Image (cartoon, rainbow, N blue to C red; front, side):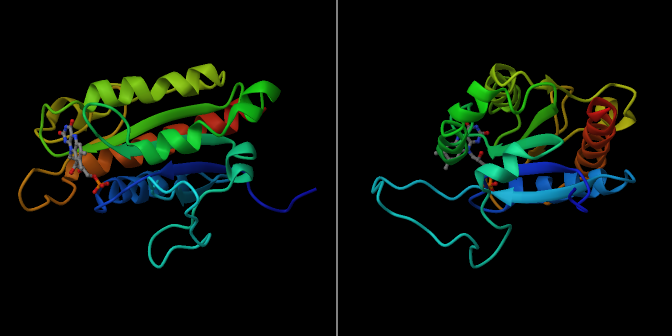
Length: 201
Ligand SMILES: Cc1cc2nc3c(=O)[nH]c(=O)nc-3n(C[C@H](O)[C@H](O)[C@H](O)COP(=O)(O)O)c2cc1C
């Protein structure tokens, strides 16, 4: 028997750090729940040179995710910057390597959700989150968002959606996460962690 606590995997790609900020706030929310840990893991960038490979631990930021990080999670949050209204290629590339977990049903019944950061306020947060949910549904995961009982959802004038946490980073100087965006990330992490504990029963 492992003496490790069950964990919510917060799996993300971030090129300029905004999605990484969301990931760390979600991790804080997960850590509010006794008996559940947050495991933050990044995916490496993809290169036109498909032979390129990187060490498992980057110079900065979260370690790169392994397939077993994903297979053994109790819950999952996937994050990506919005790229043309959709998730970025590195995260999609990682997910596209999980056909074996799909065949074995390893992720079935586990709770999961998505988060994103955009340059412009109406630049595709919802489309990105909705399309990120498709692989989760194909894996048989129980998709979770954010309920309006989270006060920040009705009050935010930055990011934060019922489909999952978001950040409006801006197109000039990058805006830091707002108070509402942070609160919604943490609520989302906590919600995933609580669901993971319940669904594991
Ligand atoms: C190729 C490319 C496409 C992008 N597409 C969009 C987009 O469709 N909508 C938007 O609002 N921002 C878009 N952006 C901006 C990023 O989503 C935004 O800068 C994000 O906050 C970066 O997150 P990161 O710091 O985690 O990399 C795009 C950026 C790049 C490089």
